Structures are given as structure tokens and as C-alpha cells.
Length: 324
Image (cartoon, rainbow, N blue to C red; front, side, top):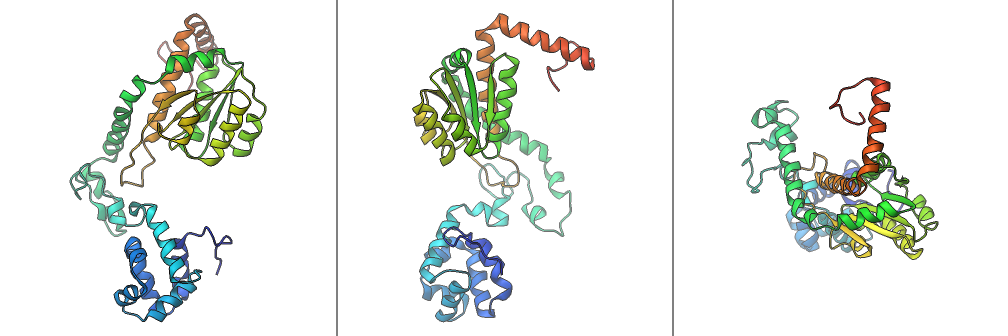
């Protein structure tokens, strides 16, 4: 059995599922009980677990050891940690409830159609187009952040970008990694010297080379990524200025010279990519537009050159996007 090599950090849910085929029948009953209700199992005493599973206390103890725990106490601790991740990732019907008021089926979605392999493939689409649900969540994320962005210090942050000898964009993970490159693409169009880095070791290395005439733009939805925080602290130690686009009460926000706050609220529909990146993209667009308007003549000429070069290369019309 290929168990995790780091016993302090293994995923107890995956471990139990992996071990089930090799368990005794009584231990499988314990596994089924636990996987059905992680939080409840974490709170229950060993006697209660045995009673609810219909097995002996000794079977519960053997089960704990079979899945790699020293005893039942460690098992319960790991179950509590796993439950804290969120039951929306553990229970299929709850994970697919996408109604706004939390009432199952209020939005016309059929959860069983998404988790039952025998269900009609297009049952959900017939109830409500997926495009509509995705659009509504994106719209909600943008609307929720609109007021926050109206109060953000975009003019000051844009002035810092305009004056910087070099701009470095740091982002890690999913959306932040992609949007670090997105910001680089936007700033290049405005003639700014910019580089983007997603690797944590490279971020640390780059941060150690910075000076007071450099600006770091750090992107993080949570503002709690340890490696990103370390790189930003190093950059600050060497005098670089820091623009952050992140959660307002986060550790990363506390480091910022200029904070552009974004807030996120994830729904129980875990199968769709997070809408939080749309809020961050809106913040980036406002920041870049502020910079373009702060240097209107320069921006206009650079954008004209790009349009001329691209049209000569590929053809195009007056209203064709600048880029592709």
C-alpha cells in the first residue's frame, strides 16, 4: 500500500478510501460511518463511534491504526482537520446545491443529475443553462467588489508604476499565477518595464535584488500564501514599494504601501472555477487604465504603434481588439 511519506501531513479522507479494500468487515463499517460524517465522527467518543458503526471498541482502535494513526485520538484530530476544509467538498448533494438561498432545488438545478452517472446527461442544462449560472456568479463577484474598488488608491498605485525603474508582478497558485502574466501583458502595452514571477524560489531571489526605485505588485485572493508573504517582506526590506491586490484583512494587505482590496465568497458549487479571479481582473483593468490615463499622450502613441504593427501583420478593422 502506497501511503503518504509524511505522516504529519497526510490526507485522512484519501487515506481511508485507499485502505478500505484491505480492511476487515468491521473496520469497513467504521470507515463508512466516518466518511458519511467527518465532523460528527471527530466529535464522537470511541464508544459512540463503536455503537453507531455496530462494532466493538477494539475494532475502532484497529481501524485507527490501519489507516496510519497512532490511536483513536490522533484519528479524531485528523478527522476534525479534514472536516474544516468544508463539507461542500465531501458531500455530493450539498456540493452541487447552487441555489442562492441555500434551499435545495430553488434555482431549478437537479443535484442528482450531476452526481448520478445514470442520470440524463443534459438534465441540468435543461433545467437552467450552465452559462446562465456561471454568468450570475461572475456578475455577483463583480458587483460585490465594485464599491470596494471605487475607494481603492488606484491613482497613487498607478503613479508608483509610472515612476518605477522596474515593476515585478508576483502571483502564485491558480488565478493569481495566470493574472500575474495578464498584468505583465497590459503594462508592456503602456511601455512599462515589467516581469512576472510565479515560482516561489525565483520570487525570493528577485526580491533580494530590488531597490527603492522598484515596485512589486503582489496578487493573492487570500493574502495568506507563506511563500508570497516572505518574498514581499524581502522586497520591502530592500526598499521596494508594494502594491497588493488581495483580501483587505489579510497579512499581505498589512504589508502594502497601496492596497487594492478584493473580497470573495465561494458558493457550494465546487465544480466551476472560482469567480474570484474576475474580481481581481477587474482590479487589474482599473489599475492599468488609471496608468494609461495618467500618461495619455504616451499611451495613445504606444497603442497606435501596436495597432499599426498588428494590422500590417494580420489585417484587421478599426474595432478589432488590440491583440488577439
